[in-house]
Image (tube, rainbow, N blue to C red):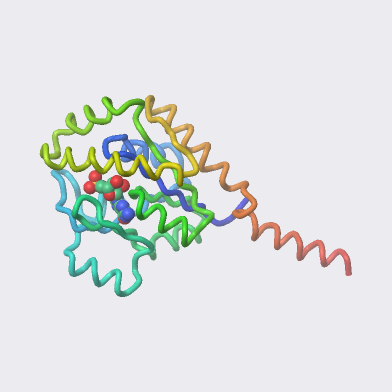
Length: 208
Ligand code: 5GP
């Protein structure tokens, strides 16, 4: 098995239940690390700095970019979001599978830089359910909900760039499927190169 963790990008329409899925994965399996992003948006009630996000000013955000401290970043509905580099690199090196819950522009940047990354898109069984979940959350204004729905229309055009689309109908089923899809990645040749190279060197030793 690969000793290095795999990098997993989870995207999906706002309201598709990505956050709940991530929590379930982390609760059920020990091998995942969830990256905490930096954002310039305001915290929602109940959100804690350093837990849901690092809530930073635009100046701090610009500085992080200038110092190459983010592996990707994007603007989403007028706010900036980015993935801090150090945590991802350290966790992957220690063998953890690292989850990035990010939107599509960031996902595509990551795939370009690290082609072995797996991109997974989470959606609801229908648009109606998506809208109801967004409204039902009660945390967003009607304007924000409208912006997020129109963003969902845009994002739906980029889904073909993803490796998998999972429909989050039943949470337990979707969590199990997500776990299986990620674990399968360990067996891909691109994630087994260290093992293959070690074996090759040992084989060479037998030939001497
Ligand atoms: P929210 O404001 O609802 O927490 O997140 C809005 C969107 O930003 C979601 O689609 C979420 O996946 C995305 N997002 C969160 N963190 C990051 C990040 O570090 N980079 C990028 N590109 N998108 C992010």
